Length: 354
Image (cartoon, rainbow, N blue to C red; front, side):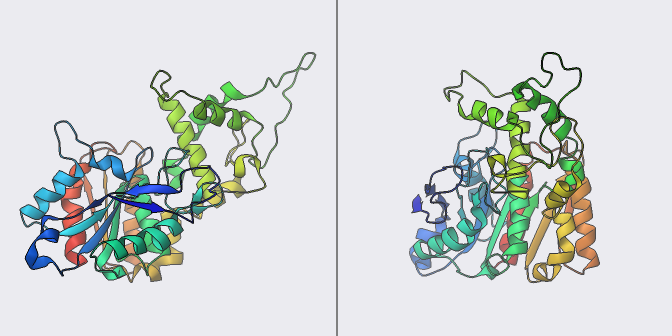
């Protein structure tokens, strides 16, 4: 277990910890005398929203945790020995998309400019992009794609399991429920003697209800007596995405919203800001960088409840049109319970990053 004190996360806008533990998996070969000078491929595990890398070390009922899975895959010689890093990128919003944002923090820089060099200094790694990869599911899969696009000098390969793509489908269907949920924290809009609703600030600005909702989330007692509802989580996730994809230091809460809080109208300019971060729309801008990537693995269950399979299909098609070699697979499954897919992606990455 390593521990790192980050200068990049110091004074981050959410006040989240700058000092974080960095668990590292070392294969059995790492400590064997005959391998005492050997350096190893390194993979970085990027957690999904509401998750964190260290949680993947926990014991699990009826199935393997990631450490047990790695021991088995390496022990059965299905993949070479690798070092795996479990960074902690959890935020007060409940998760991370692993990109830089003035409203969340500079997490792409944190990983690429601090954690990677730190691990390479402390552990016997093959300290070059060609021997380093990242992987994850959902937000973690999205982060893996984005890091490979934006930092090809750091990452030589990635695996994305149901990573967020095609935002029109993934997020668009969730916003109506979130807007209705946020109404619980609005001020009364019909004042005595009035017969029409007074307009709220436009252009994706909070009228106060978002701030009150976030205060509600932060003010909960953390001993489990005040459980968050599924709609709380969904609403928090969409606000986290707003803070990630459309930050604005001059706006309330530090970010703008893609929908009008009161009438639900899509604000096209704000949605364009979101779509600039959609991997589907990013391929035309970043395909030359992805050509340098040694290993690309993308998959998704064709019954994904967030409809991400449509986005991953578009990604695969766009990559193929640009002649970018990659492995794309679909399987019978949803967005949940898909860790068994790591049995495919981890050996794929390890073999190509040797």
